[in-house]
Length: 192
Image (cartoon, rainbow, N blue to C red; front, side, top):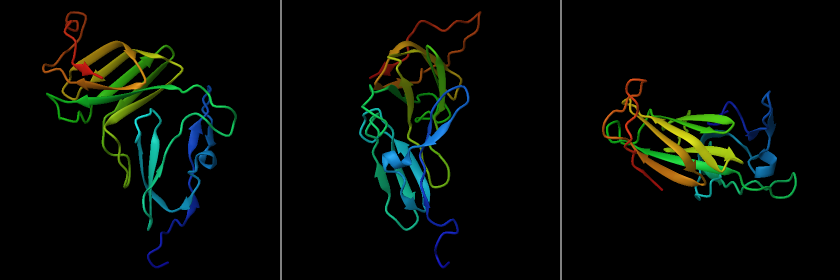
């Protein structure tokens, strides 16, 4: 055994949710080049080239890190499909912590709701980007985007354009909503 892993070297897998009422996962590692035989330990998922496709960085025992670049929707299943829409959100805390760790982002489209929590951890020897990525498929806009800040403020944006990175700054005062106390009309600071 010496300094070798107890787990040994195995083929990596890359599972894709094929959708449907009962989620079905299919291994796409062979298509993407991720089916490498190694003793994988760490993983980071980030859009390294800002094209809206999430890329993967893999760290294995006694090997250099490997970057697997996602080249889009083309695959072995047929011709290139139209690129799915996406949105990346970067939060900037002003009242809460600077990186908005602990904030929750909720994105609503016509037929789906997605939620992300801002964190920097992703498991053993793994990390997470401060950018929150939302895959939107055919939806060319986000109907509603809500940010629930760690100190209690809530930012709500409507009809958000997609295929871009959106930076949202925390309001400088806590906003609370109720039937007796609606959200003030003042817009939060958002930049492209």
